[in-house]
Length: 352
Image 1: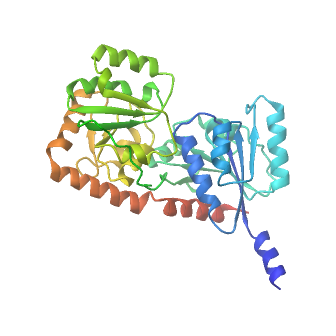
Image 2: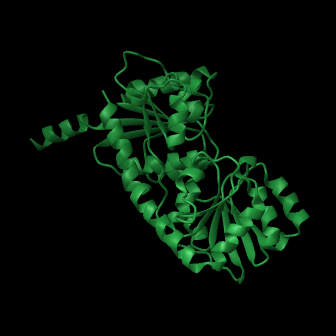
Image 3: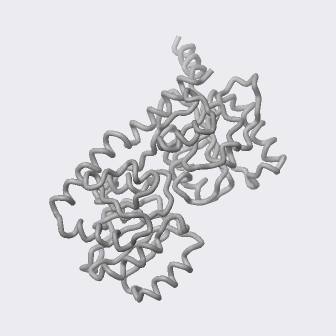
């Protein structure tokens, strides 16, 4: 009887094929890792990953997940990639195929007689034509959901589920400087607005800036730093899976993006009881309530950014208020447990 019941439990497992075609270390890729690890912890689920070949990502994920397939040339026009994915689908027999962004969603095989549901996950305003092979879509903001519906998608086929971030692991970097630390984390891309924050640092002489990330804009940042003569107050750190050490060391977190669909780092700040200052755009505009759980500045206006940072230094009562409310919002809306359950419940609801 025990053997029979175990077999039945195995047959009733939800089988999820989780596919990421990107190789960079952006917000979506990092959330893919967190979600995959979170799903793996759940009982009654079998998960298989397909990722574009990336030795550091494979090594990190393989510490938690054993069933990982890598594809070196993950491109739509690579017939081997199509063949490999179809083969894995036929062998694994998933109930759900979850694809991330354009590359993985575009390459999905179309099979009306299949026993699986295909779900595309959007974290940005991508071209909707890349998702024609998806049965359902998940967006991480309500504004993105509206964007998808405007293209004619059925409302019952589009689910809004926000992101979650890792818990605070209480690690810290001890700084010898007496200056306050402004923290900024993200890809070095024009959309992230890090150059605006660098210009603002000229007017924050009692602060130093820690920038965590990497990307093609680094040379531009170095030129701005040199021009503003702030070389001794700006420090760069490579991206790491342990962001707690930076968040626990900082006095304020800034998200200066010119364009930002969601803003994972904002929730990171809330989870680490750090006051956040954000530009009034996209996702940050929606999730941050000014003077309630953070402070906002006008997009591209680094003078207004400086003013908001100074408010945090001068108004202790306001600082405590936005820290408390931010942490409460993280716990009630963006914790791992809540978001993983939303994904699993949605998958169970739509699976064949």
